[in-house]
Image (cartoon, rainbow, N blue to C red; front, side, top):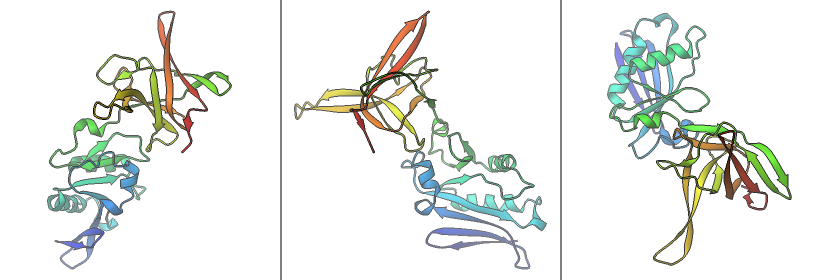
Length: 256
């Protein structure tokens, strides 16, 4: 068996050939800057970890499947390219081979699942552990607000299912908030604490934003179609149960 690497500007093709020169298995590794996954992940995991590649194609001819050739090829590719972070999106093109089976296959050769709300299962090979384990798991609670009051542009929304709001690592509720569109979760805005801080050098005031979280440390995403730089969170108690409301005014929103 012969393993061949064909390198181009935008991708590398890795091929497994029989002794007779027949292509048995192949895979394609694309550079991050030209791969659609870069926008899909929204740079979320592409921190300064070094370069990243995307496994954009992988297959074995039907007559040679279930003989270990695919695994042989991908293990070779990982030995050659493993210094980089390698991503893939699981999407089987074979009706006899399910996505679940593909996931198990990739896990056996060292890929890990990325637990995010994405169109399909993404996985990553990270030989040196440059991505923290916690970064592989999304910590987000999505809330659909329920309108409870509306007059002259002033709106109040109940936030069902939310048992706590605070800045991460504190128990303080910040009433003055902002929420800004979330790039990956279209239609949702992330809730931030908005702090009015004085700059000691210029003696001027500026706003600083801190992500707000629920009691379990999940970022809070509010289903809404506009950015708001001034919103308010209020809480009330009824029958020993705490509930939260979000107050906004149409005059405060930013259409973007």
